[in-house]
Image 1 (cartoon, helix red, strand yellow):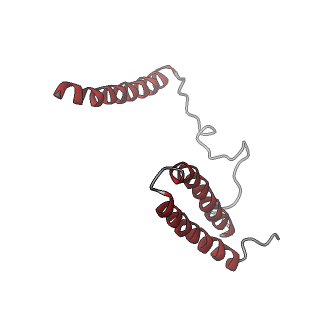
Image 2 (cartoon, helix red, strand yellow):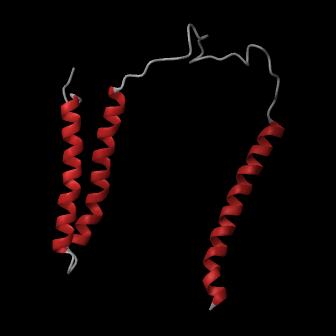
Length: 124
């Protein structure tokens, strides 16, 4: 009984060790086989092949975070709806699952209302 129980863990551990060894061997072979001739030109910071001009700090618009927030809201909604649809059809889960879905849709509605109040949904 005990050897069967630990057999699954041994397989997972073996796969993890093989994966770590594969990455270590790949990095080691890369370090040994690549040519290393550092020059001042190679050590310069560049962006798309052009020498940088000005400061390295750039201001990011907050609206991009709001778009990401909206994406997360609707991506989580889509991920949650598919398993919910399969459980909803099962016997004995109908009422409780329906209430849980309305609570979840309430949270989504609050997130959408927040985005609407912030003016994210207006196209400029």
